Amino acid sequence: MLEVRNRKTVAAIVLIPVVIALAVMAFVWPNARLQPRELPVGVAGPPNAAAQLAQRLGEHGGAFDVTTYATEDAARTAIEERDVYGAFVATPEGPKVLTASAASPVVAQLLTAAAAENAPSGARPVVDDVVAAPEEDPRGSAFGSSVLPLALAGVISGAGVTLLGLRGSRAVVALVGAACGIGLVGAAITDSWLGVLDGTWWAEAGAFALTALAGSAVVAGFAAVLGTAGIGLGAVINVFLGNPFSGVTTAPEMLPEPVGMLGQWLPVGSGGQLLRSVAFFDGNAASGPALTLGAWTLAGLCLVLLGRGRRGGTGAAEGPGKAVEARPAMAGQSTAGQPAAGQRGQ
Image (tube, rainbow, N blue to C red; front, side, top):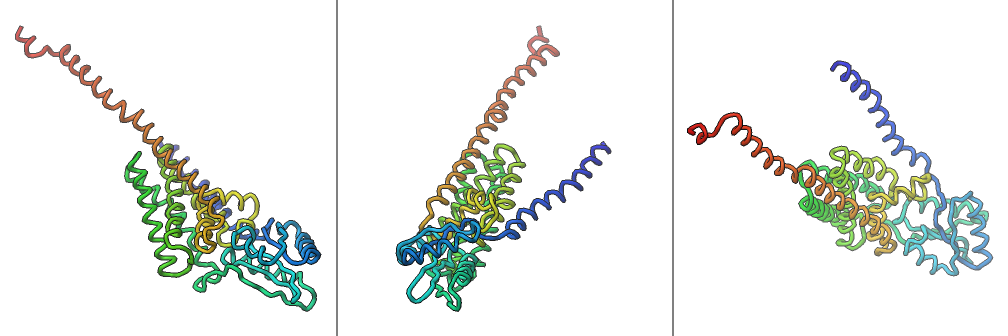
């Protein structure tokens, strides 16, 4: 017994620092390696001038993924549809850069600096913020701060439903109901109160709700199949990976690979992109994140129902059978050991 306790003590001493080290690495490493990697941008203007701009941007070692547009209006449309983060435009008046601080203030600043570096000597580029961030949140810090609460909401909802003992369809109803409440509260705080979102109120509430439901369904689904260990696995996906890999505070293309791509396949990253699309870009480019969240939700809820079925097949279903078998056995044993009252009378 003492040896077992000693092993547990050693395991705690070794494993806890390892887990903390992995958590710190997951949160710190992506931010320590921020730089553009195939960042989608556009160039526009006369063919020769646009080609020169594209060539200069190509000299940045794969930092930019350049698309050429015939006109400035076409580049603006691409920004509004979230095809690119910004565009460099050659005009008769001089260089011009189109940004979208609502998509990423960090990227908008980066494009402005790149335009100044590539401008002719003595020329200062004109900056036009096509889709500007709200005045209440010009640096996007409040929007970025919504990531961790979204991640925690999924974990808390999924763990709460599990620990309350809700199973099967009851668990599904509880998860959906809690997600709807989270959506309403999230939109009320960020839009109605703080004013850091500019989109349709109900669309924003739906984005909050779907993100929370995807995260909570994952936690509850893993817990239904794996037990309480599933809560930990769901927390890893939502918090320890989903939060730092989301790229919401900067941009997925600013994170080291494969972190940037992986984060967009997780509930928090796709939820952040969905919320940004409905809040600032009239829902443009929202279908991909919505499908990702829908897939997580469907998979998680199926696991919840599957876990209920397994419990019913191995626990609840066998219980009555064993009880029925036990009664005759006990009755037979009583009859064999001590004759019934009628037999004693005979």
